Image 1 (cartoon, chains in turn brown, blue):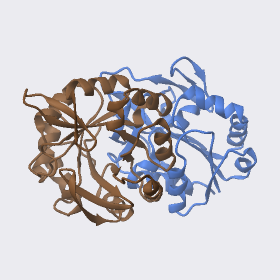
Image 2 (tube, helix red, strand yellow):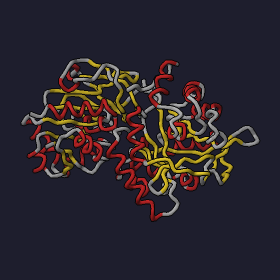
Image 3 (cartoon, one colour):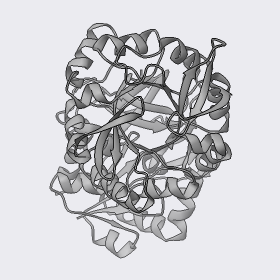
Image 4 (cartoon, chains in turn yellow, purple):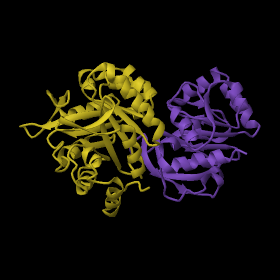
Length: 253
Length: 201
């Protein structure tokens, strides 16, 4: 059987790793290539690099970072941030990415998912969605780093994304992100039960038990986290040993 | 020198860098002359079987590979590259492969999620130099929707379980295939690539 995955996510701005707290308050942490190697050695199952560089002229720095990383780690690498066209997919795949994640651009133009899946295969198209609970006990899709409420229902979007060709779905919960008090188990589970592609939980990891909860009760196939790993609060090696003891099927190495 | 065959598909850089990291000389090439000169061939592959075979034929690479393998040169097919080594694939139709090994590539008929994507365990069937240092239960990274169906069970060194037994590492003399991506499979993948490189005499 397929192992549940632990995925560190690195937000990269102009070639440096940062971590946002509720998408604001960024603080510089480390060099992406060094950090990628470190996580690789710690037993990360995959890495996500998220480009948050605002200015286009600095985007090339990011591609160089992707290239250097792909040359020095031997686990899958997912790239996200600023992907708007099939051409953008091609650029990062050429630089050495294995998967590409789209967020806002897919909401604006859902056909982007289909076009990319047809050209590169659905296994490399990751649909990342920022979701927030609403007053009607449902969840809504937000775009542009959580600033714009699209009014689209999260479950509907996940199902549509899968049918358009997404090979994987990242559910990032805005309400729990940066709080470090656990993933949103309910939203993650609902989406996971609704789609047949793997679901990656994101937003809210604070302690080892949070990972267990979302992989077990949130029915996630993978759990993504940033700051708990960057600040060394949780070591991936120890986390996996903990999960293994709790009966979660993880890759030990 | 290990020649990594470039026929316009997929990310070849990772395979190339992995060999170089392990201390082997390798190059990415689409030139049959370079392949003729090489000590071993790596046939990578991502994408559709039919397109890949067309590309190989169009560039005279299919013939070149067959001749080299006929002269007992080592070849490693990775992922789709492994599938191309076989007689036939039923991926969206029925397509002829290189026919270097006996067997067919068939679709998963399973309730499980397809593609079979992620880290799955290797189970060892036979001891072989290629699998040296690999323990039963080590994980490797798979991404595929079709798998090998073959009567040549003696060729299967490692299986993985995904509802059915999926051949993961195959070997028949100088012809080797890995259904997963060794270049994306962490330390286990690197060990397998090193073992392959060390088979070069």
